[in-house]
Amino acid sequence: MVKNISILGSTGSIGTQALDVADKLDLKVTAITANTNIKTLEEQVRKYEPALAVVFDESKYSQFKSNIADTNTKVSAGMDGLIEAATQNNADLILNSVVGMVGLLPTIAAANAKKDIALANKETLVAGGSLVMKAVSDNGVNLYPVDSEHSAIFQCLQGCPEKKALKRLILTASGGPFFGKKAEELKNVTVEQALNHPNWDMGAKITIDSATMMNKGLEIIEASWLFDMPADKIDVVVHRESVIHSMIEYVDNSVIAQLGVPDMRIPIQYAITYPNRFESPVNQLNLTDYAKLTFFEPDYDAFKCLRACKQAIERGGLCAAAANGANEVANKLFRDGKISFLDIGDLVMDAMLRQDNISAKTVDDVLTADKNARDYVLSNI
Image 1 (cartoon, rainbow, N blue to C red):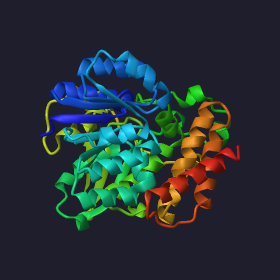
Image 2: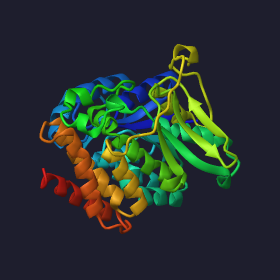
Image 3: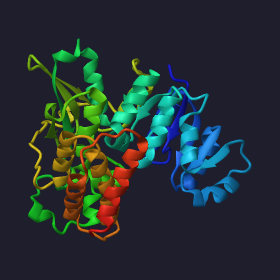
Image 4: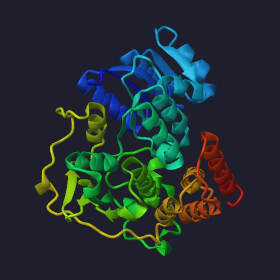
């Protein structure tokens, strides 16, 4: 049973909910990290008294260190700080919920330090899946999925007798705020409209990824690595109610699903307590509150990011790293009002297709593909 936990990205949506779960389970929080939100990070330091607090934005290091000078918490900054939090000696589990490629090096460092990992940073597996899974395997550590869809598959697989019994994985998608819209109707989408997610309360980057369905595309790639499944055995179905979080299908065509109210504290808690289950702070599911559950095919033409990710995993190699890097930049450019909503999919697709499908041998290979894709986007806006 986990007793001590280090949370990377503790001020974000997943991180704050993970702290709520830690409270309920009476866990000791040994390290916390934030990018720029030093106000919330200070509040967390004073409540949880961790041994280490990290500010990724080094320009805020001095101010934050001064703010908590009266505490016994050590302060670090930058990537070195994230890696320190990911390799803490007294942490039983590292929960990585940072956003973007910044999560790759800490995840590999945690595995190499023989730490079990609860992973909510999907870009880590998307960009460097082969390297991460090798580090996990070589060090004999456990990698637990935190994303609701991958947690659902992980939970359903507990009843799987052997790999050959599994036929396919079925990821559910909410469809985001633009469900049913065609490409022509998405030309003039505003940032405010894209941030208006119908079911989930997430950070800005992930919410835009949901609107473009890039989030689901990343999850296809992540599922391929987590569960060792080819892309052609991973399907997506739009399920507006977000009650079924994902499904698996066996060779006898029996389908097993995991259901629950849309609340991330269920998958967070299961990743922390696996294989045990405990009471959670989440509301009980009452199916009669929903009356019906609906399912639709995704639109790969209107949501080009989803198609780009499918092609990236089919092409293999560093193509997924390029798609992810291009999206991180394009997503931010859209939020800053510099490109249109549909430009995101075009730029992701183009950057991915420009990338040779060569395998990643080192982290530098991944970082190079990521940088090239980012540079391509910035030079083509």
